[in-house]
Amino acid sequence: MRKKIVAGNWKMNTTVESAPELVGGLLDASWPDDVQLIIAPPFTQLGVVAQQIQSSNIGLSAQNCHEKESGAYTGEISVAMLESAGVEYVILGHSERRTYFGEDDNLIYLKTKVALKQGLKVILCVGEKLSEREIDNHFKVVQKQIENTLCLFGKTEAANIVIAYEPVWAIGTGKTASAEQAEEMHGFIREVVANHFDNDFAEGISILYGGSCKPSNAKEIFSQQNVDGGLIGGASLSAEDFVAIANSF
Ligand code: PEP
Image 1 (cartoon, rainbow, N blue to C red):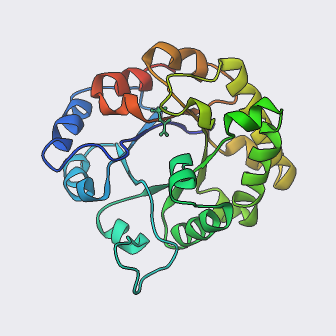
Image 2 (image 1 turned 180 degrees about the vertical axis):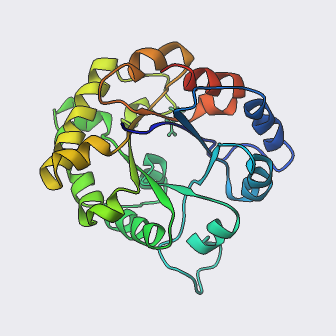
């Protein structure tokens, strides 16, 4: 059985003062036991959120890490720092980091490598731009992103990676991939993973959908055979919406 996951990427939102209220809304709510809820607050809120969720089953993720273990990298955050703050997961390869911060597959691979080596689980984002889908290049683009990152690891390490398929044209735009488009790409990703590793391995890996996922469309998307949950941006800033999404399986 693949793990069902609903992860909330808070991006550059909330403060040390406002985060506890959002987390409080989650702690007061319920969702199925077989759904792993994960939240990814900004760095400065990790400590306060970690304390608040410590006796819950909510997982804590960071939104980024540096590719080096330590050293003279002013302003950066290492995996060890995240772990000492209580973090278990890190989101890597998000399209906003690829677009605004020039992160390429090689850097994402290096970050994934250090994160896995030091014991974090990785939520690895892949996805095509609209211009790439328009010329029917979306499968090739996503295949390459996976081959340049996940496929460079052995099975033991890769088992700690969750893939998030996030078509760039659907992130924060209100445009969602249809359930059929999501299923088509998720099935393809599983095939790429199976061809590189094997069927059993590919069957065990969780593949999340991300891109304007909300309570009104989550049920249809999550009902697809190869969709194991979602990476949620905007809607994760409302405890009510986020929990409604987690209750959509
Ligand atoms: C995201 O940033 O990972 C995301 C899916 O954002 P949104 O849900 O707002 O489209």
